[in-house]
Image (cartoon, rainbow, N blue to C red; front, side, top):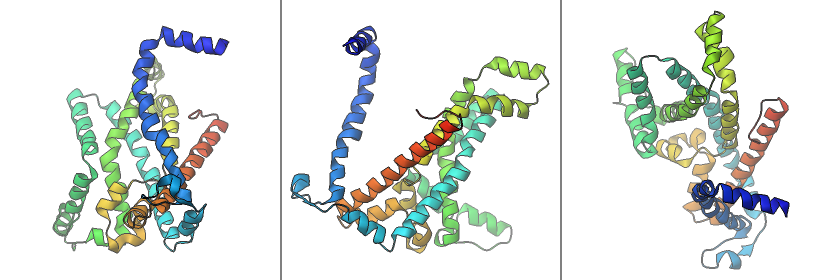
Length: 303
């Protein structure tokens, strides 16, 4: 009863804040929680004409088919490798970019650089992927530069050895600038008096970054790392779908494109849902594991 009265009193005191909160709450309820009911079809032989209530229950049959499929290990390996490459090479880039932008003291240069770094984020992968394909074509700018130095043109998009590198680099170019905004905001929250004290003690710029800036944004880095680790099996279909082709399926076919190709184009809705549930479950386990490890190390966590 006391707890109920406490909630009522809190809502009455800050009713305007709760009113502003309502659109976000409704968004998650309508578009995130209510659709979870559809997960049931992962355990059914779902047909649209029968609906969820009329479709036959088959248990873990679709999961078994996915795990026994000859392509399962290939798409799982490709997904994990590309995700790990993006995590290893892509995750530090926004941090480094934010540190460099923070140290740029010429105002016009700082603003111009930020704008140039942010712009690629606002291009869809349809547009940005077209730019990448054109740049790497036999007559594109990359091959033009190679020819200037006496080399032979390379058909990058048909060479499986280059494909994963192209995915990682293009993703870094497109998203690192936008991702650096969070770190710039975290850096802005570091106490300026710490830098003044460090300067009085004779600390150089690198020493200030190492002993003040990085520890000051450590919690932000940890939270974003845990969130990105949770999406390790969800690379997103747009980038890969725009860039890959049958010649690089062996290194570029990921779980998302496999689901689109096998589950949706062949109208195997239950199969596609089962694979999506598998991805979400792995992501949930990784988030909990990463959060547990970081808390045991005394570095904080998501909760």
